[in-house]
Length: 374
Image (cartoon, rainbow, N blue to C red; front, side):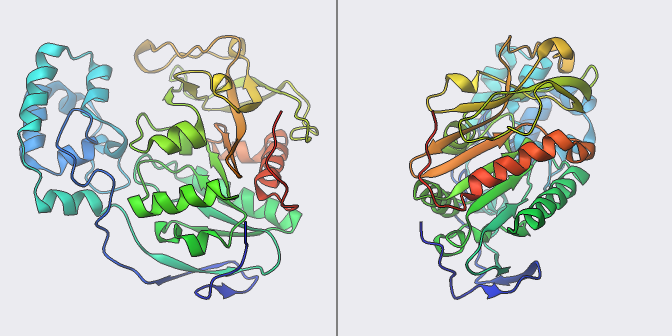
């Protein structure tokens, strides 16, 4: 794809700036006009007093037992990635409660104020980057509306910057989703989603990103970028990620585990000895991404080396084949995902940094070759 630099961008090698261009009010968020339901983001329920009262009355123990942070109405908020249905699953609430609650929620009219509040967590800010003409430019995108991994996000930024220096790649970072326009995305070889959580792109931004990928752009998702319980954007979940997160261990949350590398024909992971041990938060998925057409698994985790038990005793076993890192071609573009990287210390593990560098090299595609996997 063409890597011309649009006229709105500044050129320098100094890093990135936060000047915003062409900011406009956001009115095209994905769930703007959707009726209230059991599948609405909990955040949208909490922002409407009538909807909140219905849920509180039906499920009073949830509001009494759950941490207060779960009910924040300012983002980032865990409520942005929870639904009433997911709360019901956690508390084993039965249909005798859920069915009348669903009917009561559906009867609430969606007002202009509801629409405004639903869209206010999105942005149209267009950052002006300082890019490297004629070289590899990587965009790290770190907008978070859901769960904020905090210091781990900063650690991942720094790790990517260091890998960029070592390989001669220019790395810029933003949390402004207004960058997702055709002209700005076209300046980047790849976009790295750094622990993003919660829905973060408007409908027009989604469309720009899909077009960018389909026409030769690239995506690398890190840890939390694939760690939400629900997604309103099926293309992101099914095409870019290829798997739906279901949970991580809580007994304990962080554990030592053995990771194995699968050989790739183009050398990703070649310098990493298979069978290394590291400590992190280990994700499980609803189904094995290896079964998704076109996905090439790079790293798996040995379930016998840790305890895949989640909150409330949730069984998180995926069996003998439990992928953590994989990639695929998406039309002319490239997509990769790594579930590793919750802890700051993960970005100090030599084996993982080597693997991350290989993944960045693949999505950066310096030679401009056609994506081809076995």
